[in-house]
Length: 203
Ligand SMILES: [Zn+2]
Image (cartoon, rainbow, N blue to C red; front, side, top):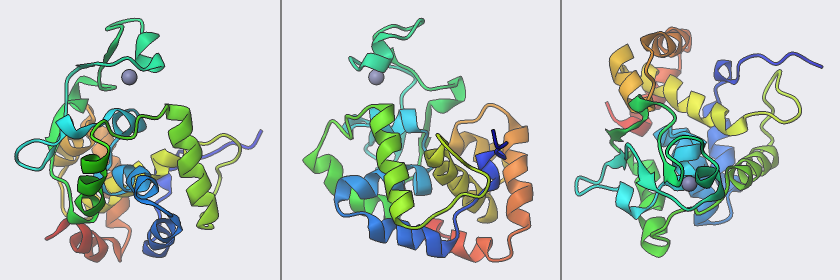
């Protein structure tokens, strides 16, 4: 079996990101891509997000737990019947860039309960869209974590935009500064990343 490198080592280029969004046919497909790509949320967060997660401030508030009837949460060993973030650091409040809220706001107005799909369905949509956009992830074969490449791209862009390790940990919901530092080091090697980050997330 071919050994695959960590997907966080691959970052989508601006051309790939644009191709991916052009491939989306409707607002649900755009939300599936935009949530991990420009908000950096985990798949588990994206599929559980609903209109209650948007606070008065317009930020995204990932709760520390919520009652959930999905099969994934029903099978959980601890906190059965509840959704909880992957880590304690996962409960956080983060700003939503305009490129996301332009689609997320009308989507949640129409579907207040959010995407309401399984992890498997989310992966299937994300992989199909990335394939249709002609995106090939070097070193990834078979059943791979494509949505994670979107989240990794977000982390790299945020690092390139000037976030320090604690800020990046807070945004991404990581409990370990070493993870953030890896993205900061990687962003420093990408000459065009800072300008792209400012364009998306502001200066
Ligand atoms: Zn659930």
